Figure 1 (cartoon, one colour):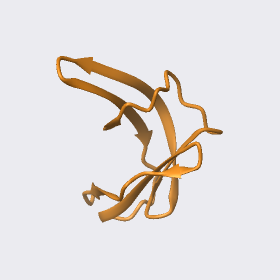
Figure 2: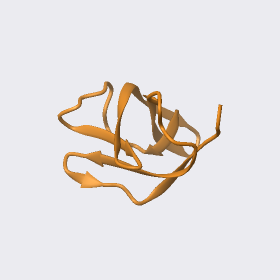
Figure 3: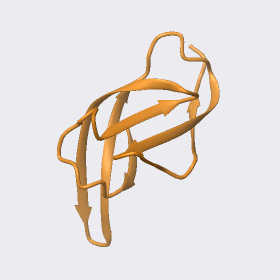
Figure 4: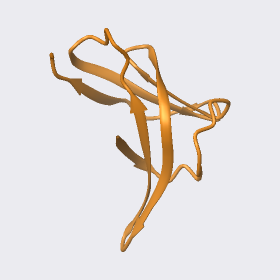
Length: 78
């Protein structure tokens, strides 16, 4: 699970939203909003596939063709 600025989505829609780690397309399991005082954000829950390498992987979120700022997903070895 990770958080982003508010995406305005209430459910995962692969035609609108995708998440890649080191170029590998991740399965999005859930998307929703988080609103508390001073915070208006979205959460994205993804499934990490077997065989994803350990280490710091570049993470990219694409929404309606627009790419996010670069982020890092740290994967620990088993």
